[in-house]
Length: 167
Image (tube, rainbow, N blue to C red):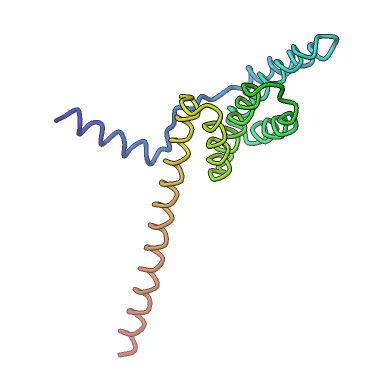
């Protein structure tokens, strides 16, 4: 019984904190990936350049900085048409979904996750991201309804007070 109460309390805490299972990336990793891309641009094969750019894109969309995330999204969108295999396309779409999730563009993220799941229906990372996106959409809806209800209550209270003063 105590375990169930603990889980319930944790779920409420996670609801308001917005906790998810998607990793973050720090600036040092991004800098290392940028160096790797620069080195790969100096004579490496196209495959090595492509892999370096994918690692940098991964790091950028997992960053805590909005500018990094936007840069990662732009890189992925530009490279999406150059996907040679279904696996590459799936990875890029997933990373785009992460980027849009980190940018609070949940509907776009959800659409991209759905595309990933069409390619690989049992892909655990995509399923985890889908749940995180749906949880955020639900949370935003609940908070929005709370704000709306509070505003309506204040308006009704103000009208009632004005009417009471009149009489």
